[in-house]
Image (cartoon, rainbow, N blue to C red):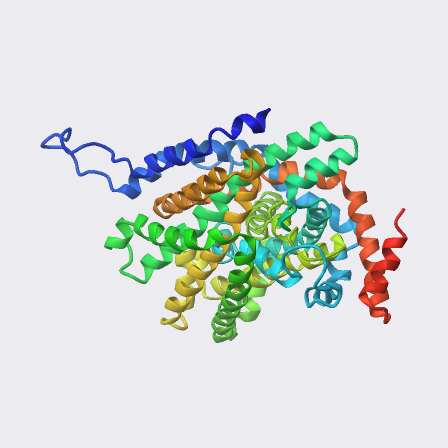
Length: 539
């Protein structure tokens, strides 16, 4: 009944949001002769969205403990939000539960993504590599560049250590949820795959006699996923890309800086042209963009870091010391740890439930095969790329300038060695943002269709709203964008991880089946023979 009633509103929501973006603050006829200068469109949009951002942030990041130390305004110096304990604790628990599958199956993951255990007639839409590229394009974005710089500026170099730790443990969270994403996916008569947390929450929990709970969690997840697609998958990406574009086209005070919404309109048009194609076209686009932009960025990081070769050892010392020897001992360490966990979770999305939507489309007969491939995501995203960004901003000392946004801080770090590289970074930033926007538009659309149905009206209305949100995100202040993005995206982990915990026996069984299959193929059997044998062993 809830989903039926919701289906009446998507087009109305699109028209309302369009009015909010385009409506002026006041008419020329109503303006008094001595009225103050009219606010810019950017300022109007920011002030309109800020109250909503603050409320969403309070709900998602509710604290379970506040430090006794107070700042000058009497506020706690740091708080412990339950959501970060939920995410971080789940990653550690799952890593132990699956006996460090993130490390023991790393080689198996590399073999799988190369197609060693696949056949062209396996059910699904895209290859293992394309599924990985699509999902990585949704996580490898501005969070790896701007988000890391924000974490280091707030928590110091020690935050980088905790980001890496959560990245390693998050590999297991990603494995578990993506295995379930394939296990409970639905392939329709046209060969289109519908998967993700919404499917395993409804179908998986129904198998265990928890149908009402599963449906409730699925609806909650879908609503949060739509919010996440507008926040971390959209507004944060375009906001930081716009900041970098401003940096190389005149800086603060320039025409572009005062009218960032123009950048949003241009990107919105580009994204709109791509997202009409669906997952197959998205897979083609991202499989080309992701490797290219990742290589460019990593090479740039290495050049900067090696150019400061005399600071390599001191940089690692700062990271270790900052992770365990922060001011105020326990309070300082916990504060740094929480900042690192928050930024790592935002960056790699392990446990959030977004990646299973892309991985569900993989061609495979063994769900755990795609789960194993998925564990490479947090490794690439956090352990490699985020760590590279951290090393750059620490060794150059730019993290000490806390008055700048993340992308500006990172850009200036590159500029200390290669002033011209800021333009290359701008290209990489735009590619990161585009790939993330494209992938998250698909994630949000699947959640939107789950709630509102699969009609053409539902499809078009979501895409229109998504493109309008790009304009809003470009115009908003960075602080408000970061707060909303964190809350909207990380909130998805609440319903998702409940489902993952309940379905852990299913994940364990699927892992055993795939390992048995892979061992037989490695032993010389053909894929068909090995698959037939393993399938015959099912009860």
